[in-house]
Length: 105
Image: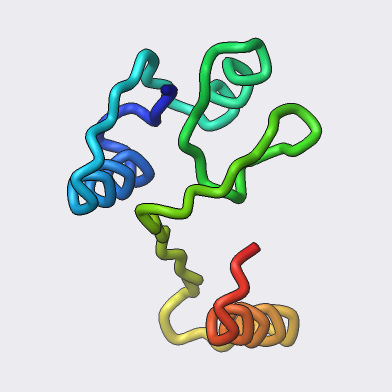
């Protein structure tokens, strides 16, 4: 198993979810970047737990993890006191629409 290095947001989410589900992790490699994990998997080095947004189905086989469910929060930052541009307003509405529908693929 290839995992993100400790003290990263993704690793914290993985460790917490696996501990809550009482599913111990056994890993061989820890990497600092998702692209490094993808390269290792593409070269035949086992499997990796990665965010769906970093996956490339052209290079590796993808299997969605059913249990435990690991969710990663995202945010949209803006400068205090400034309004949104029309493009950002549309983008923000789309994010809310997807989140409300629960369609994160």
